[in-house]
Image 1 (tube, rainbow, N blue to C red):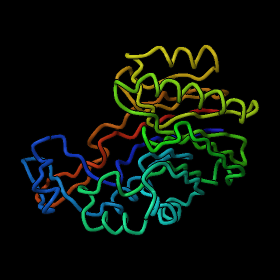
Image 2: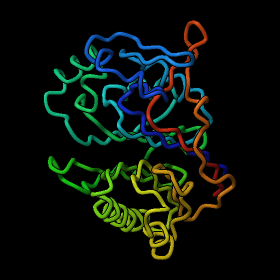
Image 3: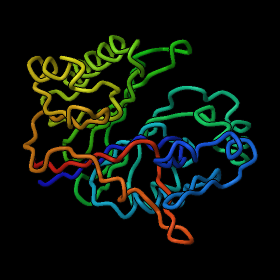
Image 4: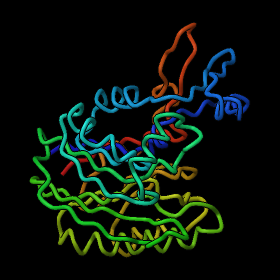
Length: 273
Protein backbone atom coordinates (compact mmCIF):
# COMPACT_ATOMS: atom_id res chain seq x y z
CA UNK A 1 0.00 0.00 0.00
CA UNK A 2 1.29 3.45 -0.96
CA UNK A 3 0.64 6.22 1.57
CA UNK A 4 1.14 9.91 0.88
CA UNK A 5 1.10 12.21 3.89
CA UNK A 6 1.17 15.96 4.38
CA UNK A 7 1.53 18.06 7.52
CA UNK A 8 0.84 21.79 7.59
CA UNK A 9 0.49 24.48 10.22
CA UNK A 10 -2.19 26.59 8.53
CA UNK A 11 -1.60 29.68 10.72
CA UNK A 12 -5.30 30.08 11.53
CA UNK A 13 -6.05 30.59 7.85
CA UNK A 14 -3.94 33.71 7.39
CA UNK A 15 -1.32 34.82 4.89
CA UNK A 16 2.33 35.62 5.64
CA UNK A 17 4.24 37.56 2.96
CA UNK A 18 8.02 37.08 2.83
CA UNK A 19 8.63 40.83 3.15
CA UNK A 20 8.19 41.85 6.83
CA UNK A 21 7.53 45.44 5.73
CA UNK A 22 4.12 44.31 4.43
CA UNK A 23 3.01 43.05 7.84
CA UNK A 24 1.96 46.45 9.14
CA UNK A 25 -0.23 47.66 11.98
CA UNK A 26 -2.12 49.69 9.39
CA UNK A 27 -3.16 46.46 7.69
CA UNK A 28 -3.83 44.72 10.99
CA UNK A 29 -6.09 47.43 12.37
CA UNK A 30 -7.62 49.08 9.28
CA UNK A 31 -7.61 46.00 6.99
CA UNK A 32 -5.69 47.87 4.28
CA UNK A 33 -4.01 45.62 1.71
CA UNK A 34 -0.25 46.16 1.53
CA UNK A 35 1.77 45.58 -1.66
CA UNK A 36 5.32 45.47 -2.93
CA UNK A 37 6.67 44.41 -6.33
CA UNK A 38 5.94 40.70 -5.83
CA UNK A 39 3.52 40.06 -2.95
CA UNK A 40 0.45 41.32 -1.13
CA UNK A 41 -0.61 41.12 2.48
CA UNK A 42 -4.35 41.00 3.06
CA UNK A 43 -6.52 40.87 6.14
CA UNK A 44 -9.58 38.83 5.16
CA UNK A 45 -11.04 35.34 5.04
CA UNK A 46 -8.76 33.09 2.99
CA UNK A 47 -10.46 29.77 3.68
CA UNK A 48 -11.26 29.06 0.02
CA UNK A 49 -7.58 29.45 -0.94
CA UNK A 50 -6.50 27.03 1.80
CA UNK A 51 -9.27 24.60 0.81
CA UNK A 52 -8.24 24.73 -2.85
CA UNK A 53 -4.62 23.93 -2.00
CA UNK A 54 -5.51 21.05 0.30
CA UNK A 55 -8.23 19.61 -1.93
CA UNK A 56 -5.90 19.70 -4.92
CA UNK A 57 -2.89 18.16 -3.17
CA UNK A 58 -1.98 14.47 -3.50
CA UNK A 59 -2.32 12.91 -0.04
CA UNK A 60 -4.02 10.07 1.77
CA UNK A 61 -3.66 11.57 5.24
CA UNK A 62 -3.25 15.22 6.22
CA UNK A 63 -2.12 16.51 9.62
CA UNK A 64 -3.09 20.16 10.21
CA UNK A 65 -2.24 22.47 13.12
CA UNK A 66 -3.45 25.96 14.15
CA UNK A 67 -6.63 24.85 12.44
CA UNK A 68 -9.79 27.01 12.73
CA UNK A 69 -12.34 24.57 14.23
CA UNK A 70 -15.24 25.96 12.17
CA UNK A 71 -13.46 24.86 8.97
CA UNK A 72 -13.86 21.17 9.81
CA UNK A 73 -17.09 20.16 8.07
CA UNK A 74 -16.49 22.25 4.93
CA UNK A 75 -12.92 21.03 4.48
CA UNK A 76 -13.88 17.38 4.97
CA UNK A 77 -16.47 17.77 2.22
CA UNK A 78 -14.09 19.60 -0.15
CA UNK A 79 -11.37 16.98 0.30
CA UNK A 80 -13.63 13.93 0.33
CA UNK A 81 -12.15 12.97 3.68
CA UNK A 82 -13.03 11.79 7.17
CA UNK A 83 -11.82 14.07 9.97
CA UNK A 84 -10.60 13.92 13.55
CA UNK A 85 -10.76 17.35 15.19
CA UNK A 86 -8.99 17.89 18.52
CA UNK A 87 -9.55 21.26 20.22
CA UNK A 88 -6.48 22.88 21.73
CA UNK A 89 -6.54 26.36 23.30
CA UNK A 90 -8.64 29.55 23.37
CA UNK A 91 -11.95 27.86 22.57
CA UNK A 92 -14.20 29.50 25.16
CA UNK A 93 -16.95 31.80 23.83
CA UNK A 94 -16.36 30.38 20.35
CA UNK A 95 -19.22 32.23 18.67
CA UNK A 96 -17.79 35.62 19.69
CA UNK A 97 -14.26 34.58 18.74
CA UNK A 98 -15.39 33.47 15.29
CA UNK A 99 -17.35 36.65 14.75
CA UNK A 100 -14.30 38.75 15.64
CA UNK A 101 -12.11 36.65 13.36
CA UNK A 102 -14.47 37.16 10.42
CA UNK A 103 -14.33 40.91 10.97
CA UNK A 104 -10.54 41.13 11.37
CA UNK A 105 -8.54 37.87 11.07
CA UNK A 106 -5.07 39.36 11.59
CA UNK A 107 -6.01 41.38 14.65
CA UNK A 108 -7.61 38.37 16.35
CA UNK A 109 -4.93 35.92 15.20
CA UNK A 110 -4.74 32.77 17.29
CA UNK A 111 -7.43 34.07 19.66
CA UNK A 112 -9.97 32.82 17.13
CA UNK A 113 -9.71 29.39 18.78
CA UNK A 114 -7.43 26.53 17.84
CA UNK A 115 -7.38 22.84 17.06
CA UNK A 116 -5.43 20.08 15.39
CA UNK A 117 -7.10 18.23 12.51
CA UNK A 118 -6.42 14.88 10.86
CA UNK A 119 -8.02 14.21 7.48
CA UNK A 120 -8.13 10.71 5.99
CA UNK A 121 -9.16 9.98 2.42
CA UNK A 122 -11.00 6.65 2.55
CA UNK A 123 -10.22 5.64 -1.06
CA UNK A 124 -6.86 4.24 0.12
CA UNK A 125 -6.95 4.04 3.91
CA UNK A 126 -10.64 3.42 4.58
CA UNK A 127 -12.62 5.32 7.17
CA UNK A 128 -11.53 6.35 10.65
CA UNK A 129 -12.27 3.60 13.18
CA UNK A 130 -10.76 5.07 16.36
CA UNK A 131 -10.22 8.58 17.75
CA UNK A 132 -8.31 9.31 20.96
CA UNK A 133 -6.84 12.45 22.47
CA UNK A 134 -4.30 13.19 25.19
CA UNK A 135 -3.58 16.57 26.78
CA UNK A 136 0.21 16.87 26.84
CA UNK A 137 0.00 20.26 28.55
CA UNK A 138 -3.33 21.06 30.23
CA UNK A 139 -3.05 24.86 29.95
CA UNK A 140 -4.07 27.61 30.02
CA UNK A 141 -0.57 28.72 31.07
CA UNK A 142 1.51 27.58 29.34
CA UNK A 143 -0.76 27.03 26.35
CA UNK A 144 -2.83 23.85 26.18
CA UNK A 145 -1.23 21.22 23.93
CA UNK A 146 -3.10 18.14 22.73
CA UNK A 147 -2.10 15.09 20.72
CA UNK A 148 -4.72 13.25 18.70
CA UNK A 149 -4.46 9.57 17.81
CA UNK A 150 -6.39 8.28 14.79
CA UNK A 151 -6.72 4.70 13.56
CA UNK A 152 -7.94 3.88 10.04
CA UNK A 153 -9.58 0.79 8.55
CA UNK A 154 -6.32 -0.01 6.79
CA UNK A 155 -4.58 -0.34 10.17
CA UNK A 156 -2.51 2.81 9.78
CA UNK A 157 -2.40 4.96 12.92
CA UNK A 158 -1.71 8.70 12.90
CA UNK A 159 -0.65 10.98 15.76
CA UNK A 160 -0.92 14.73 15.20
CA UNK A 161 0.36 17.40 17.56
CA UNK A 162 1.56 20.97 17.86
CA UNK A 163 4.25 21.04 20.52
CA UNK A 164 5.15 23.95 22.80
CA UNK A 165 7.02 26.73 21.06
CA UNK A 166 10.04 28.94 21.71
CA UNK A 167 13.69 28.31 22.69
CA UNK A 168 12.85 28.63 26.40
CA UNK A 169 10.23 25.89 26.03
CA UNK A 170 12.44 23.45 24.10
CA UNK A 171 12.69 21.09 27.06
CA UNK A 172 8.91 21.20 27.42
CA UNK A 173 8.46 20.44 23.71
CA UNK A 174 10.93 17.55 23.93
CA UNK A 175 9.01 16.14 26.88
CA UNK A 176 5.75 16.42 24.94
CA UNK A 177 7.28 14.59 21.98
CA UNK A 178 8.66 11.87 24.23
CA UNK A 179 5.29 11.34 25.91
CA UNK A 180 3.41 11.46 22.59
CA UNK A 181 5.73 8.84 21.10
CA UNK A 182 5.42 6.53 24.11
CA UNK A 183 1.62 6.73 24.18
CA UNK A 184 1.26 6.46 20.39
CA UNK A 185 3.39 3.32 20.18
CA UNK A 186 1.37 1.83 23.03
CA UNK A 187 -2.00 2.70 21.49
CA UNK A 188 -0.92 1.54 18.01
CA UNK A 189 -0.19 -1.91 19.42
CA UNK A 190 2.24 -2.85 16.66
CA UNK A 191 0.29 -1.23 13.83
CA UNK A 192 2.14 1.12 11.44
CA UNK A 193 2.27 4.68 12.73
CA UNK A 194 2.84 8.21 11.46
CA UNK A 195 3.65 10.74 14.19
CA UNK A 196 3.86 14.27 12.89
CA UNK A 197 2.87 17.89 13.01
CA UNK A 198 4.47 21.14 14.04
CA UNK A 199 6.87 19.66 16.58
CA UNK A 200 8.61 22.99 17.27
CA UNK A 201 12.05 21.41 17.68
CA UNK A 202 14.71 21.62 14.97
CA UNK A 203 16.89 18.50 14.62
CA UNK A 204 20.03 20.67 14.59
CA UNK A 205 19.17 21.95 18.07
CA UNK A 206 18.18 18.75 19.86
CA UNK A 207 18.94 15.06 20.35
CA UNK A 208 15.24 14.22 20.77
CA UNK A 209 14.86 12.79 17.25
CA UNK A 210 17.77 10.40 17.76
CA UNK A 211 16.14 9.40 21.05
CA UNK A 212 12.78 8.80 19.37
CA UNK A 213 14.44 6.64 16.74
CA UNK A 214 16.54 4.63 19.21
CA UNK A 215 13.77 4.08 21.79
CA UNK A 216 10.65 3.90 19.64
CA UNK A 217 11.87 3.24 16.09
CA UNK A 218 10.43 6.56 14.85
CA UNK A 219 12.33 7.95 11.88
CA UNK A 220 13.26 10.19 10.24
CA UNK A 221 12.85 13.93 10.75
CA UNK A 222 12.70 16.50 7.97
CA UNK A 223 15.69 18.76 7.29
CA UNK A 224 17.86 19.96 10.17
CA UNK A 225 16.32 23.45 10.20
CA UNK A 226 12.66 22.32 10.03
CA UNK A 227 9.99 22.42 12.74
CA UNK A 228 7.42 20.31 10.87
CA UNK A 229 8.00 16.57 10.67
CA UNK A 230 6.49 13.23 9.67
CA UNK A 231 8.07 10.43 11.72
CA UNK A 232 7.12 6.83 10.95
CA UNK A 233 7.21 3.42 12.59
CA UNK A 234 6.53 0.25 10.61
CA UNK A 235 6.53 2.00 7.23
CA UNK A 236 9.11 2.15 4.44
CA UNK A 237 10.05 5.63 3.26
CA UNK A 238 9.73 6.03 -0.51
CA UNK A 239 10.17 9.82 -0.61
CA UNK A 240 11.42 11.43 2.64
CA UNK A 241 9.59 14.38 4.20
CA UNK A 242 10.36 17.62 2.38
CA UNK A 243 8.89 21.13 2.64
CA UNK A 244 7.04 22.43 -0.39
CA UNK A 245 8.80 25.26 -2.23
CA UNK A 246 7.34 28.59 -1.17
CA UNK A 247 5.81 29.31 -4.57
CA UNK A 248 3.67 26.16 -4.27
CA UNK A 249 1.71 27.65 -1.38
CA UNK A 250 1.17 30.97 -3.12
CA UNK A 251 -1.95 32.26 -4.89
CA UNK A 252 -1.75 34.52 -7.93
CA UNK A 253 -3.63 37.75 -7.38
CA UNK A 254 -4.32 40.76 -9.56
CA UNK A 255 -1.37 42.59 -11.19
CA UNK A 256 0.64 39.35 -11.03
CA UNK A 257 1.18 39.75 -7.30
CA UNK A 258 1.21 36.68 -5.07
CA UNK A 259 -0.41 35.82 -1.76
CA UNK A 260 1.59 33.42 0.42
CA UNK A 261 -0.53 31.15 2.63
CA UNK A 262 0.62 30.53 6.23
CA UNK A 263 3.96 31.15 7.89
CA UNK A 264 4.83 27.43 7.48
CA UNK A 265 5.44 25.40 4.35
CA UNK A 266 3.53 22.12 4.00
CA UNK A 267 5.77 19.08 4.45
CA UNK A 268 5.01 16.08 2.23
CA UNK A 269 6.24 12.49 2.19
CA UNK A 270 5.55 9.18 0.50
CA UNK A 271 5.60 5.89 2.42
CA UNK A 272 4.89 2.24 1.71
CA UNK A 273 3.21 -0.26 4.00
